[in-house]
Image 1 (cartoon, rainbow, N blue to C red):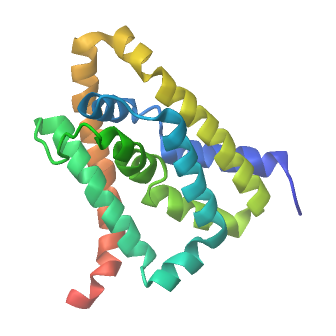
Image 2 (cartoon, one colour):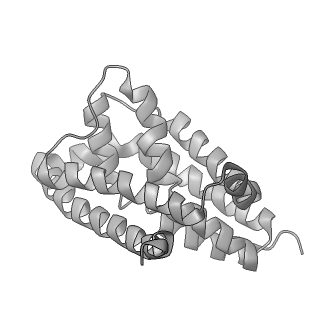
Image 3 (cartoon, rainbow, N blue to C red):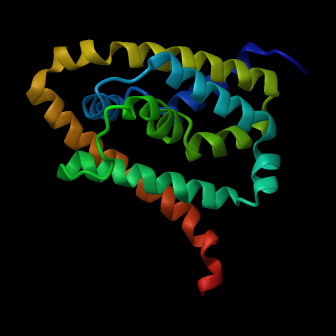
Length: 196
């Protein structure tokens, strides 16, 4: 019981795959273009707080609010779905606003892009196998990576150029759409079972 490098390493790798900050670079760049800028530190800290709160009090918090974990996942999938549509079809769902960068650092960046429904569900699942302290350390290490990726998106954009970014935006838009559809499909059937 207590701190364990093996548990921390395993939890870190699982969360890294679920958060997928590298795969979300085109989405992050799109948000930066629409809002002018994002606050990397604020987004990282908000995501960290959301994940830690959910790690230690997630199930209790949702039950107090009367929110089913499936409903939570479906809501997150709809936001990701809208973002994916913007990337693929160049339509606009999220209205551009001079002050929106303050909000964009929290929604949709910190939630649901970084600390999304998939991450929340994963955190609850990890509690079954791993000690909370090891999961918390894994969360913190992932947030450090997230922060540096958010800080370096402009350099990555310059490296890829306009053409490279356009291609990546379409490709990752389709991937994000697939993730949103899967997240919706995995949770909607049970959520809407009363319809049958």
